[in-house]
Image 1 (cartoon, rainbow, N blue to C red):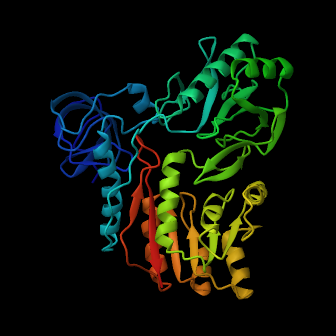
Image 2 (cartoon, rainbow, N blue to C red):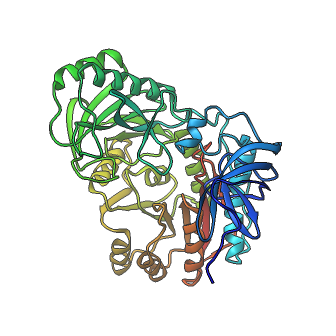
Image 3 (cartoon, one colour):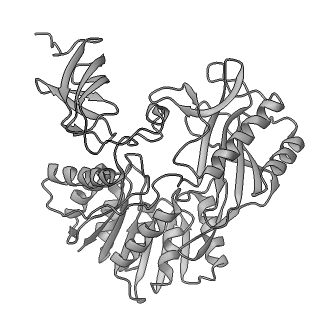
Length: 454
């Protein structure tokens, strides 16, 4: 028998929103069949039009509201929802913090894990927080534009105020766009794979106010470099460093492997928990420094360090967590697969006069096995993995090494809950509540700290 959805494309229906998905879309059910509708909140009753139907779910668009949620706030600009810059902008900030706590709770319940989740640590000013901007440059109707991709597409929506970025970054992007227009430098065209400038990236130190500009080009060619540098410096006095990054690949990865310095310093500097960090074009550096300080301070506190411990920081990046923990521990070992990040970490240790931190270039799971063979017996293992979570080999290596405590800094609740279950098989349990921290207000991303003990 052929499946027939209870809704038809382009037809209008009435429904009540019962839940929010992890992407921030409202859920309406008709005969147990879910319809996902943007810009709606639990408890709201709406008229909506169905815009896409598949076997297991549909997408809808709100037409009007019969009943609205008390948690609804005025939308700043519907472009922020369309592009996914601020998918939760219609939800009052205290309710956003609750939503993030609830997301973790729901995933734990699904796995029958009875672990309490604390209130999410929020921001006083939950916008204008990002210290790094990466925006595509495209030609629209004969004019060079900078903006953001419409959700689920590669069509650029021109934007000048990005709402969640440091306003100084927004200003810098407009300056760069206007310089590219002035010299008629061709933007990249995804269809023909021709054109020169693909993306502009700007970083700005939250404390230092030092700025770095990176022009990502589709190949080595970048005309009139001297004039570009001169114009950028004249318009943006905070700029300390200008790079060209070469990315000739047909890929969604923003930065290529080669950075060419056009002018200025190799790095810009910023501070985190009183330490100085050098940031290069390819460095991974947390984009919300105010909340990162709260996140790391909480991780250090939950690690229960007394100054006598040996700590391993897997996925150590440029050394931010390792070096923040070094003053609270006897010795810190960091491992990171990106060699330029390890160079930065060593530089940052020297810069801060930290002598009890050591960094190695290797895949975390391989290095863990080596350290175990060398008889290294850590008290605390800190993990801050990418969204895909911990590799099975890493979890296995952890089980063999048997650190007394694991401090898990997660940016994806789904893989966190999976990994908690896998670490349970290695003899680890969670005996204290999980602490969510809102690193990305107005978006659905959730960071959290979980402590597991043997």
